[in-house]
Image (cartoon, rainbow, N blue to C red; front, side, top):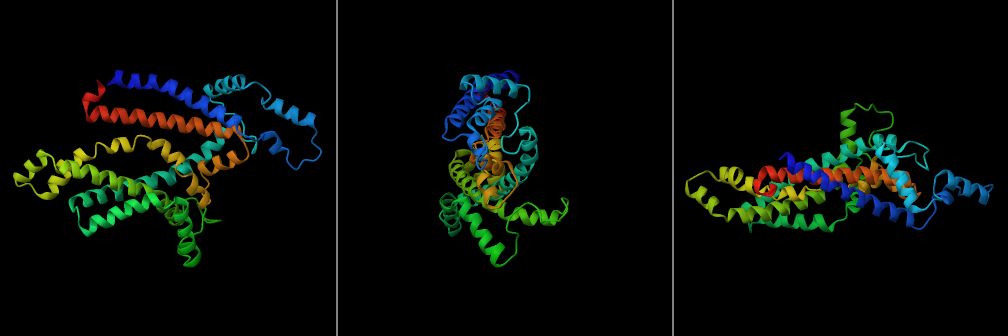
Length: 318
């Protein structure tokens, strides 16, 4: 297993470099100049001042030189400073990442706890009214945009009935340890973010459970007189859950990047919202810093997935 993990780690290095090169090139070649955006509204800025500012940020150098310089700083843990906020990118990520993880991890837990049982029930009662309702829910989860669901939640439950707050992570003036207030702010974003996951996981589990329930070992378990609950949980579910490892392959990266739209809708102070603002202002250090964090999390997710597969099925290690 140690050699298996080491091989995956070595394979992740060129993948990480490829991601950073492509992202760096696309960000820098995209239309727009961050210096012009920073100087917007400053009528006294001359062309010499703009060129001096561009030189100070290193934006007047060739792209390969800029990339090598940036990568050298990344390897030392220096992500640079934000053009817009004049703050260290590491500090900005360290401030917003926990907020995003709080939202995304909660949404993931809700999606798994609801989606997997729904898929099992749909397969167990195939063709019933319950199965039809769950299948419609799965289709709706793919058809309904996350931002629309969030806006609908705000319009009905926050604005009209005033049951939940409109947005934010805490009420102004509330303590950070006010669990009740924090929970009320979490309900809307979590529901909007987890709805698609519930639809996906229920469909995955239904498909896999239907396939497993038709296997000979399940029929043999039923022929022995085992209770149906034991057949479903101890025999069918344990085998049907393995393909879920593939569905969770990019889990860590999805936890970070998947909340971008929801954070914008609910004004959640997370890393997704920070990335959106950085993209609008062409804040290169922040954008690339988020790319590095997301890429590392993505590669870690794939390595953990491969390790999990190797533990579940030793043939994969070969």
